[in-house]
Amino acid sequence: MGLCCLWILYNFVASTCLCRRRPWYWWYCFLVGYVVARMEGVGVERHGYILSLGVLPTHRKLGVARKLMTAVQNAMVQEYGFVYVSLHVRISNHAAVNLYTKILGYEDYGTTIRFYDDGEDAL
Ligand SMILES: CC(C)(COP(=O)(O)OP(=O)(O)OC[C@H]1O[C@@H](n2cnc3c(N)ncnc32)[C@H](O)[C@@H]1OP(=O)(O)O)[C@@H](O)C(=O)NCCC(=O)NCCS
Image (cartoon, rainbow, N blue to C red; front, top):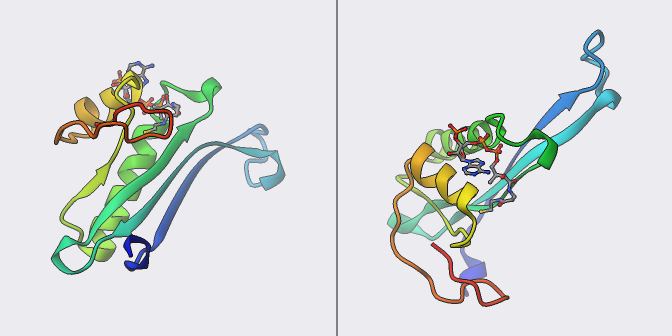
């Protein structure tokens, strides 16, 4: 039944260009990061949910994830007026936990025990 809720996918990608002199040549560009989010819930419970976020190892610590997250959050709030956006993150993923809590201001609403298939808990 959960999957029957109305949901819309939001995708943002970040790319970089190998050819500085011809940045409009799209075939020189490659993907360095992405974020996928969707709408969850119905009525007053409707909110945004971050499904996945990733940045190429060679392009980390450059602010790519911060920009992707800001873009997707703004899109969800401005277009659909969501009051909040939620997500789950592995308890051991310190980089992502830092990004969400210290930089983006997400609040910790407690641990979800064995949220992931391998048995790891989620925040
Ligand atoms: C987590 C991840 C998306 C961060 O991407 P990123 O582009 O490197 O992040 P940013 O450069 O925007 O960093 C923003 C903040 O995140 C935190 N952060 C990012 N990498 C970190 C690291 N290796 N260790 C600790 N904190 C880190 C910092 O607070 C950083 O702010 P600062 O630069 O002022 O210190 C990236 O490491 C990644 O793709 N990891 C693998 C996939 C993953 O874990 N996805 C999240 C699943 S929920």
